[in-house]
Length: 94
Image 1 (cartoon, rainbow, N blue to C red):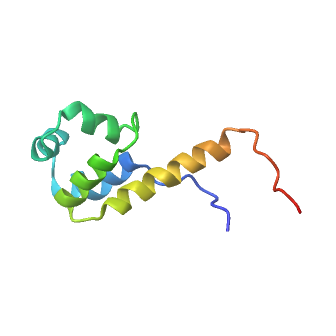
Image 2: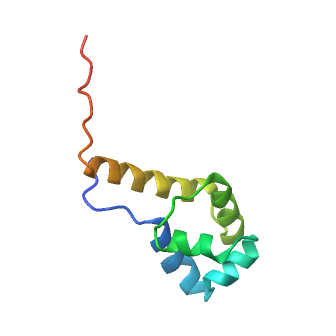
């Protein structure tokens, strides 16, 4: 079935489901992960894509799986690509 709404971004998920409920600041999470706060800020503000390393770090710190974060990224990437109007080839027929 085709998706009718834009998928939740990593930034939305991180902010609304983890940072806010846990009363964590971006700075505190960044320090815990051993990263610069600007890396977390860019994720929260959807200015960058997640890497596999970041997915593993977030999953370890927040009790999720790396696949959870990667799947969010893939869903958003596919949504953006489909909405971009990119010219795709037709299905090959025999």
